[in-house]
Length: 61
Image 1 (cartoon, rainbow, N blue to C red):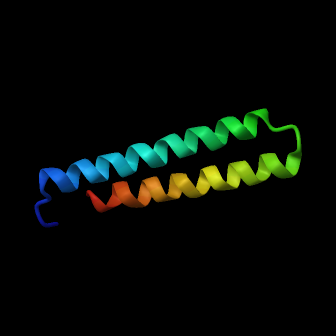
Image 2 (image 1 turned 180 degrees about the vertical axis):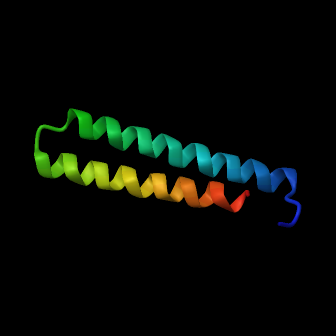
């Protein structure tokens, strides 16, 4: 992998933090949902953001 600049690393860290926050928010929304369809959709969205996080993180390896 090529060397990343400080600015690129900062952007990647920000993306990871954003995805992590979205995972947590949608899990929290799922926990508080009373409708099962809404709960399921919130968990699906959370899982998708976790996938995004994992893909971005994997690029750093």
